[in-house]
Image (cartoon, rainbow, N blue to C red; front, side):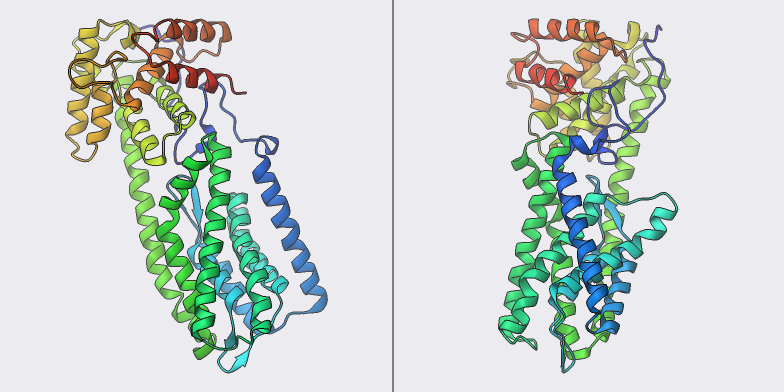
Length: 442
């Protein structure tokens, strides 16, 4: 078999590395700050505010230094134990709950606490920095936008709640104080979700409204656990003092273990799918890197067309395994290019691949995308138009079959034009246009 380009396995533009989404051959090690203005503004403004708060607090001194130290250490420990969830979402439940509770603290036992908002920001910023030092020392730097968002939540709560503590004489656990805390935490969570969605849309080049929905679904459970824990810690400290900080932080450890296990299961799923996608390459049925490139292109096109996160994940799984049916062939197709095979052979490969995937018992939607990937634009039989995911895979696979791993712009343009010529019958014109948009990115 003649190979266009020899490549080793590499992760696709997925949960583990969203910044890599884009046309094969044009990957970048990172995304320049100039390409991410929202991230630059967020990190710059929050960083400047945090530095100003630390400087001002250092000059004026800490109110309740031992309390500040206790919360700072809890935040540092929580930041040290941060985790990364599916979708490249960084989470530090203990640190976030500690920051929220310090922002909302009314008293320690019978002793009111009246520290200013900038002290809250200073303590949270110092705790986050202290917790990140070990990570940075071993080369595991944080997502700077994730750190900025955690500090921003504390900022929002501090500047809205701390002035009310003195203005409304909130010194103990009352119904008014509790409702006010809960309302402000919900508003802060909504603001953080919106910021996260804008950052996600900017990073993945997807639609903001789609990203908002993805973030709400992804962060609802974690946000509820962290927000309620922060309020409970603040209220408990009014009765038990700093003991409440330790007692009500403990349940978050259980939640953190659950979040971590969920992330590991999702990671194992993706690694298993990638391993399966490599079987056809190792067996000489398709070129090295073909499955990964089709997965990259399919995910990028799906983002361009506004698919939600769950649909993108199923699309990526299907794209990675779209050629697995070729294992049933006695003789490999020349170059592994199914676009050059007869329609009957294409259907057979797709159906056999779908049957293999259905054997897992948990990827039926993925199997359906694979089964219908070879159908023409109007469908084949009585089932109607193929799912959008199948139409995306059909275009991405045809493009890579004809282009391979080359970065030759003329060849890419010629193949893209060939796909456009078949949009009346074979390929969805919306998908081809989205592919052209993806390929046109720097």
